[in-house]
Amino acid sequence: MSRKKSVSLRIPLMSAFRAGAEAKDARKAVDLRDEAGERVLAGRLVTGRAAISESRLRSELSRDLSTLLNTVNLESSFDLGPNEAVRRSILNYGLPDIAHRTIDEAGIENIDQEIKDALLLFEPRLVRHSLHVERDKSIAVHELAVRFIVRADMVADPVNVPVEFFAEMQAGSGKIMVSRL
Image (cartoon, rainbow, N blue to C red; front, side, top):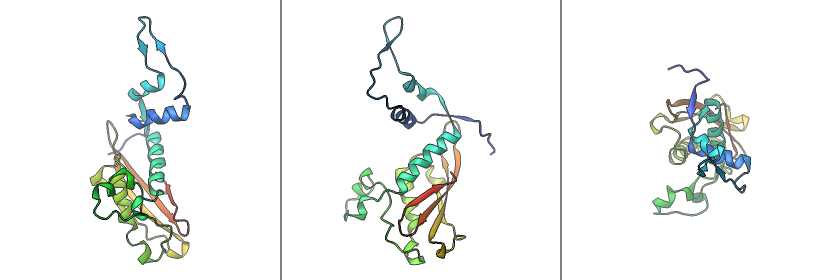
């Protein structure tokens, strides 16, 4: 299905919080009243009913994915043993520590599945059954980077938005760069 880039989508709830944080207005007193004396919601709170562009949705998703993929989860430091509830909770947000892995085949063989597991668990904007993560074999190991191609549909209203991006792991630092979202 082909879609124009100018399609307006319903704004996600998180955008209201981001708008407030960007404006740094959480501590400003807002007491707007109408003619009847009823309290009027501040402009940024009403934006929840507004539309958002596809490019803004992609930008917000890219920022959150970068945070998720560059956060080391709790299980990397502590044995969670039989604590499945903790393993699947926000306490274990992020990926296993990949900074000390080698980039040879043995060192990176499970990273694609680890990325997929983290996205399934902590990124609700991606449609579960549409998520595919695969290693990009066009990047040679001697380039000291490993790239993964991630494809999914992002939940949006009125239509889901197909997304494809690269998650490129830099050897040595273990940092993952999210690009081309």
